[in-house]
Image (cartoon, rainbow, N blue to C red; front, side, top):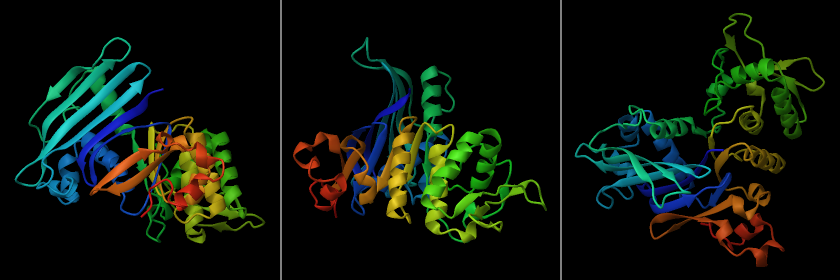
Length: 363
């Protein structure tokens, strides 16, 4: 299975210089402002870059100076290296961006590399480009370039925080908008409708899991609108009632859990799932079930999760957890497995150790 092996980040927001090697499940804990969200932002940045949206992303973020670590007076280059592994084969993408007088970025260097780690001491350069303002990996035809592009394009960052009346998940949507679950779950009804028709076992598993958190939930009521069969809305039925309810009748936490269960229990998972604070609005019992969903999903794909939930951490093993601290004006990421846990883990849960500030990652 292809995995994201490592990423080396230099000069991005609060991250001055950090190299991280990933496992299947990577849960990051830390205080407010430590840098968890900035790590996830790196992947959002990469996702937009590979789609040739670097200029738009930079402008929306407030310019290159807002992205560089402490601005361009402190940091004059943003550098990233991302390493994908499939057994002995490594496919590597790296680049350096420099700010212009117009406060946008241009590429000082962009490269793809291939490395057969069983035969050679170092990778060889597959492609190199310089001096351009949008990525070249969308244009080149080599296997390594296609491999890198497809992996970066397949990453998905999910935010189910918006449950306001205007949230997309609460609106009527197109029945045909069902290819993948969108990052804000605005097409949840259409996606579930497709699963109900094509993957009934997965659909029923999602419903069963939701019932563990919301025992009043009977089943989804998913049918195209009688007024317009091209539209569909998220509707559901309650135990002991034939009435049909819409998303407005759900609590914020229940609606978010529906989104999370659908994401993590769907038949085909993205190659990398990133979620920031999935525990938002969930009851502790629901967070325990969420933990089991994350662990199960990690047997099929990789996950990067930012959290401040003690309950979630309590369900995990040390090798699943990263500590995030703010030290010397930069974010520092430490894998918990690198610490000697044997003296503590027999007496305390991971959450208790975190609360006692024995692990770091506290304000």
